[in-house]
Image (cartoon, rainbow, N blue to C red; front, side, top):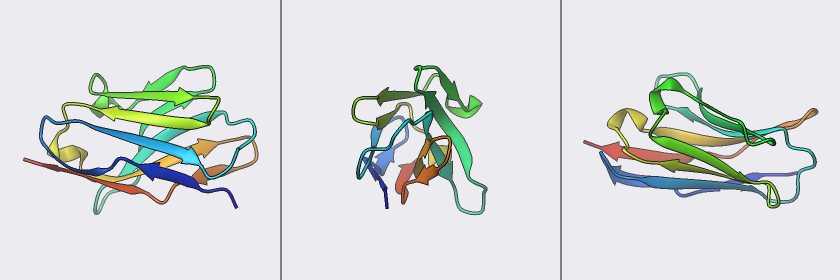
Length: 115
């Protein structure tokens, strides 16, 4: 069973930065999209940022200009650089990898931004 392993979450003050990383426990064939979702208490899981195998990206309006997603296709690793963090960014962040036949999820990593 392939697992996505996330790292880099934690507690940071407003205005600070964090970098999340996600890699599969073993190689996944033909990943189309990799991305990050988040879920705050009492809210639905929402897309934060997504990157295709071509390198094209998609961001939630709330994080545009502050977050940057990148990907290392040779390692099937995806990163999320989060700058100018706000308390509203507090959530559990989940890594996602999408192929034609499977949708993989990480276990989630907590990001807490204090005011």
